Length: 171
Image (cartoon, rainbow, N blue to C red; front, side, top):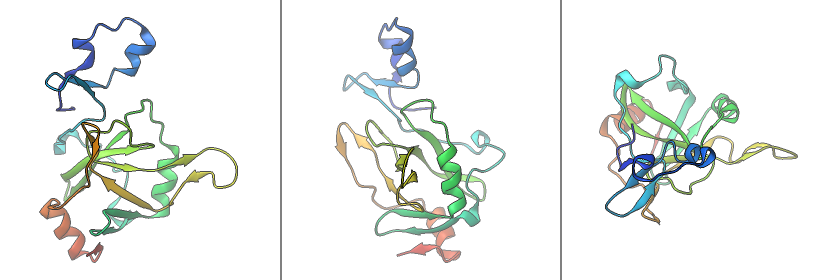
């Protein structure tokens, strides 16, 4: 559940069915009077799917200096098949021992993301079709009120500890 604001459609009377679909997953910040796209959300263990999308062994490394996850090629193949029915991204959670540590979105673009996201570019046709920068995914901290903020430490301690102990943390 997105935590920022209230559901957009409870504040704005949108009657057009196409436009209503566009705002179905959007909240509205009543203080700053603006939409909240891909907003902040918390994840409980009970929210997780029974089958993981990216297994532990498919997370090859995390580089603290440039906030980049390196994934196995099998992950990229699955990402290429994801169907994002909205422009708001697909939610993910990174866990340690089945406990959520970090949540965010896989996004094709960064516009209007108000929470953490990993961006990837999909090309549909011709030479170079597929995902650009095939295995590296930078973690960003979204667009907060139109201002891009770099993700800065501290990262969840349990996540860093797990990556370090498995030799996958690049410092």
